[in-house]
Image (cartoon, rainbow, N blue to C red):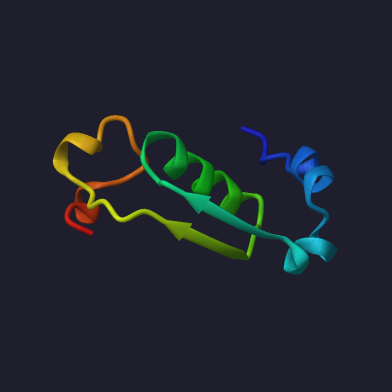
Amino acid sequence: MSSPNYLRQLELIPPEHSDKISATVIGVGATGSCVATILAQIVVKNMSVWDFDKVEPHNLPNQNYDVCDIDS
């Protein structure tokens, strides 16, 4: 198995600019939780995440959460 190739992500946000990029994600349900995870994976270091709901067991199949996130 070959190692991951991150060249395409480096074109989106060059590492030397990663400290200058910020993002705000409002609503981290099914779509927002995946968006926040992807932003973190492409090295967005300054991110605000807003959602006033709690993670419930029925959220787990379609959102990017785990059992340990329930009620948080």
